[in-house]
Figure 1 (cartoon, rainbow, N blue to C red):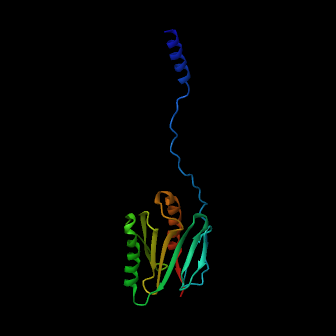
Figure 2 (figure 1 turned 45 degrees about the horizontal axis):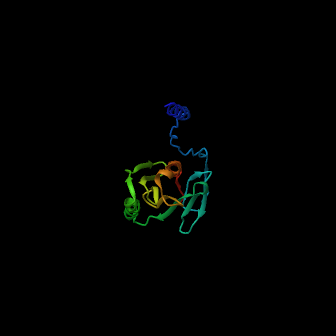
Figure 3 (figure 1 turned 90 degrees about the horizontal axis):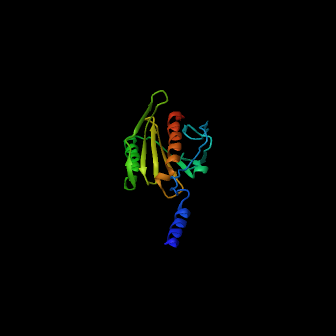
Length: 184
């Protein structure tokens, strides 16, 4: 009986100690540089400001790629002159947004933008989920110029992981629309 008591006491004393607790969930602590914008002197029929951390890559047909090397992302800018085909360009732009509906959890209602002083009118869509492009916009002066921007990441989309970067670049895309100007 005494041996049983000593064994039970030893087990009790050994088992006493710090309580083991599960580790709390860890979250990424991503830090992005403060927003500093620079005006891009593009040899194109348009101009706008981009974030200082971004670089532009010139492409044919007055298109450009605004690259974010540190975020492994780009905003692809396509330009089309309006030649009596504004309605078709708007339909095509909207169709390109909704092509992502297969993978998207949701496509938000467009955020409309209008600046009559600079003749810039447009819409911005956010595509939630594991789609290839998470943010898209189009802008036009309604008579001569039509511009479309699409955000892409150089990785298989995992929306939860890239969401902070999406929000960071989305602000830059809004700034592009706000500073967009047309050259004659």
